Image 1 (cartoon, rainbow, N blue to C red):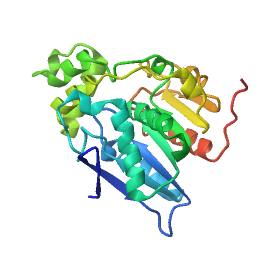
Image 2 (image 1 turned 60 degrees about the vertical axis):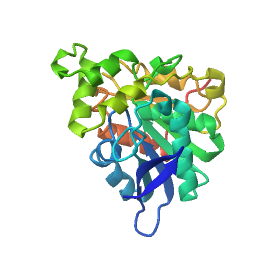
Image 3 (image 1 turned 90 degrees about the vertical axis):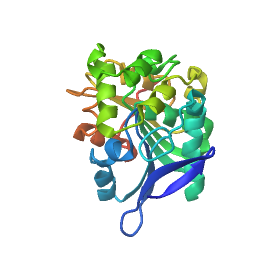
Image 4 (image 1 turned 180 degrees about the vertical axis):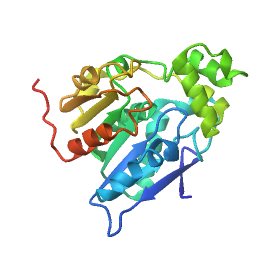
Length: 261
């Protein structure tokens, strides 16, 4: 298991290089309570990128998977999560990459693009939409922390919170670390800074992902962006869906037309 150090923490990652080397490099950032194996490998993304001769790098975000799991909320600010991605690029000697995040990973990816726009060639934001605009506490504040720390998950009444708790349990994640992560205080994303980003942006979410909102609403904030809704999918089922993969590959191949602004 390869690792790197960021902010004094040891973080795990995979670096999948196709035979003969990749024609481009993409970094993948998973969502809350997931990890690189569950979020990207098991859902077929590693294989899909390998078939397209794309070097695919995925990290376990701090608090997840095989990475360090501090229990201090301030260890999980969005700026520090973005710093981890940049530290990984530095560790691997990568100047520019494509960057793809999902759900909370999309927030990390967006923060990374805002922090180091010259390092990102193309930005893909999955599992998010219009509700991200103006959003502050992620991924849900105290209710999510309570769900993570509940002794009996059957006492959790909100379906989405219960789904995240069950997912965390299935993955064997550190629920105290996840609860701490929900307590991190982050400012709202700056719309003007988002609009000024120079790279093309893709926003994609499932039609049934009511928590994300309309991808087109978020895409409209950026200067060069396209929003795509995947029919028949919710927040979780959109990740492995073939139409999500098709949207990402069409975007990277330059086959999507940007709406006029």
